[in-house]
Length: 436
Image 1: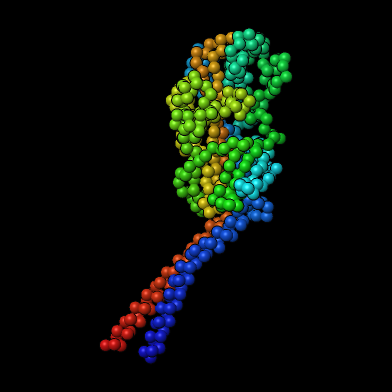
Image 2 (image 1 turned 30 degrees about the vertical axis):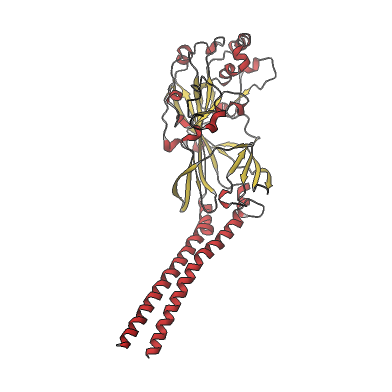
């Protein structure tokens, strides 16, 4: 009997030890197997699940617009007063619902290039009004006149253009509908100029039936953590984000990356922004921060981008504007990335579009201005989040399997250790008792 009991205890201890060892071995081996499976399916190449969903995403992407309605246009034009604005919105459009085109793989640097067809469909149920709602906004064509170098320096050209401006009855501010402001309208002043120029003006003109890009993103072939991350946009480096926090998105642990204030810093704080400082007077000799001049990308138009309500901008930028209320939670840009696959499961891209207007002595609507203004026109929030159905599929096929494997590993290891210790203690106790 003693032998049978001792043998049983030893057998139990051995079984426990085997379970513990198996659980320990399963940790790296199981993780390796799952990583291999995931890596195979999340790479952006023909035949993978990720590629199929990436080419034409099932996630609905919305672009919301808030328009800054100017409340005192006459005061500003006559007395160079502070510009009082009132935000109205959102006006919501469904965008990025078309499949990517011209997809080209580059095995040398593990990237894939593509263009994104543009399309926007108005969503009345997600908007505060209709596309025909009117706003008082800066006259985009008139504001652009002093920013053409040759015209700004040459009084003759300014005088000629002023004739067309007066004849068209154009002023510093104008009334435009949401649809006109966003997607384009025939400008009466530009229509009178006897020169073959585009007479259609709009913040996002042209948009529909055009393409955005070329984008170049990492396909994840050499590094799964970089899959779908933008390498370049139109041949230039993209803006960057930094880690902010860990959050839970529909039961999926994700890393939240945020756009840092340093992305809009002055060249003195961030030398990478030196190319965005083109106006020494406007930028206070490149010491102002919070706005970036992207005129070179907009055919010389005086376009500046910033975070909404001039969030993280220097006081001199927002000082001439009344009615702004920057808020970190409402106005920051972020993206939520699932760390195992590198997929972006939710994002909110928030940017403000501003137009620079400067005094111009020979341009009637601008002659009374005593200072330049960076005038906020609108801000947008482009959002997308993984749907409930896809989130469930993601949990089942990725995070669920990993959690289950982790649970099995811990159970095997825990039960094995407990069994081994329990049986060994019992065996030692029996031997000690028999020895007595």
